[in-house]
Amino acid sequence: YIHVHWSRHRQAFQEPEVTDEHKANMRGQLLGALSLEHSKLRTAVSMAVASVAKDDFPERWPELIPHLMGMLQAGAPHLVHGAMRCLVLVSEEITDDQVPHVIT
Image (cartoon, rainbow, N blue to C red; front, side, top):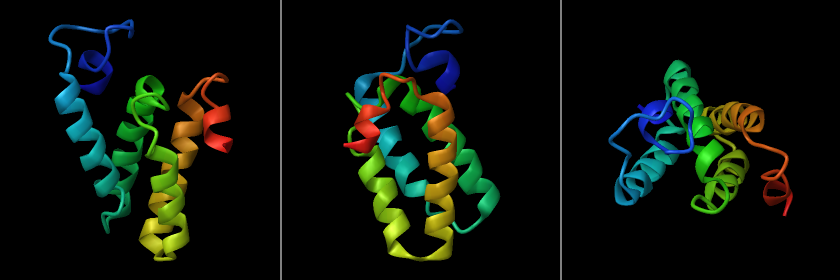
């Protein structure tokens, strides 16, 4: 769904494009789902987050990295694992132009 309908800039894009309102809602739900107890679900959510970040970070998703950092600082094992897994996958998807927004 994300790969095909999220952004017109993707090679695999097909109509309809997800509306901005729906994208914002989904970004929030994805961040919340990173704290699920089951590790396989957290990994699946992390993959979706990374796919969205490729198009939306940082301009339309500036809260992504601060949210992940907060999860790391929370200390609960499932939150730390969710954040770490997500950071690994996001780092594989983002471009060099996006990296400065991670470290500032």
